[in-house]
Length: 218
Image 1 (spheres, rainbow, N blue to C red):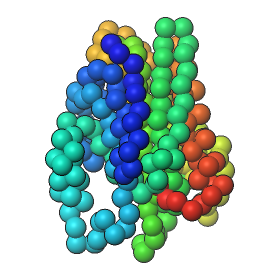
Image 2 (tube, one colour):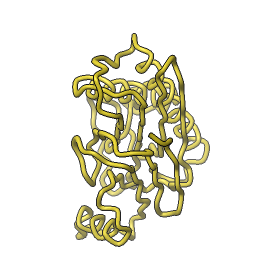
Image 3 (tube, helix red, strand yellow):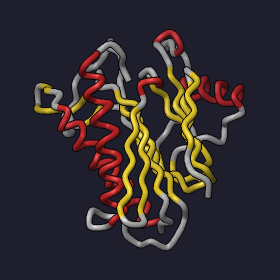
């Protein structure tokens, strides 16, 4: 299994996983549990997506032109050149996180803010791990990735009316792992620790960079 590689060519960012892996996500293209070799970000602007446009159909056309319909794909209005990364190795476990972070669409869980007429930001996070997971462990690993993302957003300290932001209204996570027999991936495991460190570092760095500029949305 070869290692992962990042390719940046705006408006695209590609995370080549190094081999076909199980990918769990709710991404715009190829959501659910699929097998894929790469995860893509497509940067967009308001002019790209007028109100009467079918965004999914538009993205399908963009991916066809790139010969990339096989890729799990995010849409983001964040400058994809502002991506951040986090990596961690604990024992035999290795986790590699890549994130684009925009918080103009920030929310606190359990509340909703009226964002009508405003730009939409998002956190798009891809996480690759090296250990083969059972289906149950894959879902558990996803919970750790989301927990780490949320902890990083809280640490970035973006105040909202109901309290500090915990994410955005349109966040998406894609988790890639080999299929295997590791039954657990929780916080007490090497893999859980590595995933938490990688995701927390990538998302916190991205959130603080967004706060420092507040010029680009995600």
